[in-house]
Length: 487
Image (cartoon, rainbow, N blue to C red; front, top):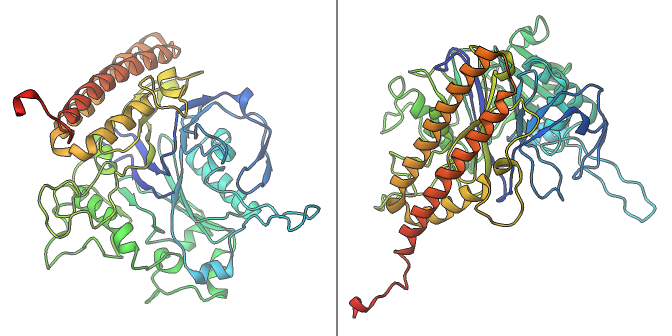
């Protein structure tokens, strides 16, 4: 999956929450958000893509996921929050290099060559991670430990980055080859920006093999590096990006420009991002993995970053003038995004509602971000009862329709889109504030179900209203327009 990740540490956020967010950029995958109850979690799992089979622990917890509606290629659950208020997003597809993959190859499915032959299952991957891990972990650290153990046992067939968060911590794990991995605790005061590349630019092996306070990795990772002479670093420094990542020309068109756009937003004065004396350009390989933002970051800022299309620069594909650079780099907000979520774990509310999952569907440039309480038996039909047929009865399809209609007429529609996004965010925040207070006062966590229905009804009202306006506007701009007065 070609995705973009943003992680916001506790002291970097405006409300002392932790946030992990990611666009899930598939192939126009039809998505929904649902709740999985413990009774519905299978005890034995088999991957559709790799055919690997995994026995699962007893006593799973309730959790949310954003699966594909069409499950012929698997569940692809993407992201969620469990009943212990632990969030997970999986995965950010990252890069590797031939040195790593030759030393520790991916674990690919090998199909039987004859009707009676035996196949060799592949490893675990993006299709599987959330289902195998999220229902069984009580902290973000436990998420790293469980996934790391599964990777060492079963291997993987791809390179991925996975984030976990709880009330106090965020951890980021990146896979290395078929069986290796490394993970870092995200510092509380930073924001991590990670496009589709191996991201980490620092690692403390002494800590990883000691107290493991801030760093963890597979047991033999340091020996693996030495044995296969993977280290390209100079002067005793450890930059995992140079060891395990890629330095391809196409990264400079597809990946690094996204990090540049986000860094430019987070630290506009600390570094030069433009001009001949820039510290970082869209094609720089050394854009920091994490930055201390120059101001606190709210959910709205995360949405802005993950809706980015290089606005304010010559690279914006929606510019109405030709700069010679328009559209040359891959935007963050693209047409084929299925879902984007922000898993937010808060500290100043009752335990039952510490998790808040913000969700939007379709192209993030045009969609609206809606909060929902995840620790409930089920979610409203507007969010969860999605079919493969286009309809205005679901948030997914309403969002997709608005984006597809507005994109060719960006200048004419963007004001409507801005008002739509602000309305859903404002009214959504009002409802959350109302029900946070009610639940704190009464102790009745079941009120979260009522809150979600109210949030869903509001989102439907605003989405249909905006769809009406956008449809009218683009209809007036159809090329076959003609009236008697034109004669």
